[in-house]
Amino acid sequence: MKQRILTGDRPTGPLYLGHDVGSLRNRVALQHDYETYVLLADVQALTDNFEHPQKVRANVMEVALDELAVGLDPEVATFVLQSQVPEIAELTVLYLNLVTVSHLRQNPTVKTEIAQKGYGESVPAGFFVYPVSQAADITAFGAHLVPVGEDQLPMIEQTAEIVRRFNRLYAPVLTEPRALLGEVARLPGLDGKTKMSKSLGNAIFLSDPPDEVACKVRGMYTDPNHLRVEAPGTVEGNPVFAYLDAFDPDRAGVAALKAHYRRGGLGDVRVKRHLLEATLAPIRARRAEFARHRGDVERVVREGTGRGREVAAETMRAVRQAMRLDYFGPS
Ligand code: TRP
Image (cartoon, rainbow, N blue to C red; front, side, top):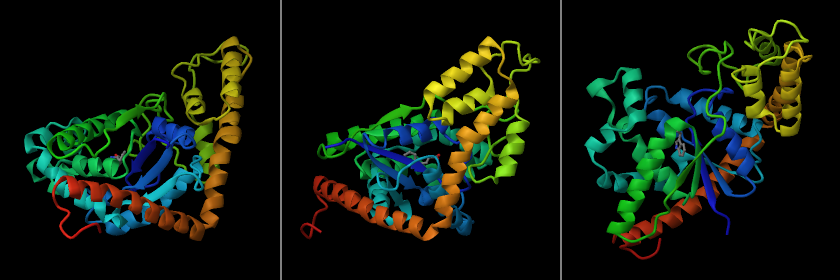
């Protein structure tokens, strides 16, 4: 039997190229070797967006389209809508007994987010405990591997702790997951200086119209010392190449471009055109194609959620049995 992968995204806005790119690439690369579940984590999105349910709802489809655009195959990967899997909420409540408030307070990622959002002591309890619900996400599907960005490592660690505690206390029924970090940790922004982020306004969105992507790529920072086409250029720290590394499936082609650039004789304009036409255009075209068939995508999510729920229900049965909660026989 294949091992399982679970990945998740909060549908709070459209994905952009910098979004957990290592994770996105790993998901696509591994979808055939692992049984892959892609969680549209709308309940987690609500933990800091509970006043904006419409925003979360609208973005579920957008994020599903983004996932499909980068190459997740709906015939292979199972898309699961978190709010429609009540077993995840059930597991969350049971796991909450296995963690302490002081331990949750030390979660570096949540700590940073609390500071960024200015919550202080008024942090909503749901948000504060979201690492526990993420442990429920991961264990409900019995995931062995979780492709993530670095900021998510504390969540996988928290999950592993809950799993070990649960298995020791009750019965060894939960799978301990491992994090899988991407090779491309973080994309630089279009300005080359900072990381790409939505709030810094230096991001390319998967849903950007073609002329906007073209305009952004044309204005992109490259090697500032590469003034003449014939001169050798620097690939390291050059955003254009970072984007090619992250998104161009033709590894040999990218290696050849790099060699040429280093040698000299390859201009920025041509590398950018390659990024635009060979790398990004197919992603955009795929997204547009799926967007034209929204009904089909909705069906992918509906059916995937059904299959996902069966897996989660199986975990739930084992958990209920382990915790002596299996009162009325097998459900
Ligand atoms: N916390 C993740 C994020 O910031 C989203 C997420 C929810 C997730 N559930 C998950 C990631 C399970 C990996 C596994 O976007």
